[in-house]
Length: 307
Image (cartoon, rainbow, N blue to C red; front, side, top):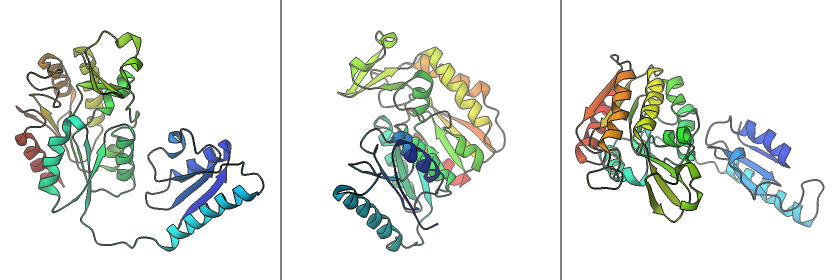
């Protein structure tokens, strides 16, 4: 298949984009839709689908729909006819990052960029989904999944969940995987007034005007740790999971607002007690914060061992 285009209302859009989402990343996909000006996440998901708002209904032709449909037709034709040629690039790898784990990822990329095309994904839900989509499409050769914070949002009803399928692509493909606990000290919400009432008395931190962070508790971290261990135990490829014993983010270091060694210990202990270690699946504990240079060096070292 060289490309796909369709036009439709809400029903047609749902039907066709479901098919588009099964196609590999890179195949041109254009959807002209009456619902393309609203929330298109349910239709696009983590895929490279181009959505064009139809302005008028797509039933029949008029001076507006002729122009819009024509633009869509020319768009798909241009994508197919002028396809970017394949070149022999460096192998691509995926990395997950948050603002509070940026120093770690920057250091890792600096060490690996000469040998790998480093694709960094912002762990905001769609970021994790996009990374997993590339794994399923065979477009990355391994993952350095430092920032697994989307799991917090899945389990605690935050706004940056990547869904129950987070980590499933590694289970199904057996891709080399180096992971960690980046930003598992926080659940993400919108503006402070949007935080659910049941969490109003919790330790909150305004990251900016539109993002409020909530510190995870000991009990929540046990829940998160069990979830992660269960997923890791299903992975049959090479797996290294690194625990940063001195903190999960820049906010979880001594003197910072989310510093809570007891909560972190609950997470670490739960993962360690429930992870089934094998020759291929190993847990590595480091007495460093996740953003310390020593931690990023160990990530690189372990990744090079298994790639």
